[in-house]
Image (cartoon, rainbow, N blue to C red; front, side, top):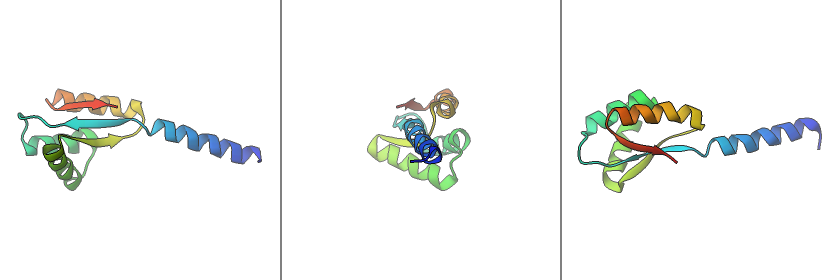
Length: 91
């Protein structure tokens, strides 16, 4: 295996490790669908359709992964969700 293949293999492994973090949004009895949708569009850069689907899943299943990516990208987004009164955590 040449050094070029080795580097790209290492990058793939790094990306897999990085992509394992996700923000999980939990259901509550406080926030409206509109508020959850607006907050997901703002904090997670969802389309209106994505945000609506996530809000429905959260409502019926109790939780939903709303964003995956590196921890450093997710931390401020999760903070925005929490600041908006939603229940979320990074796992």
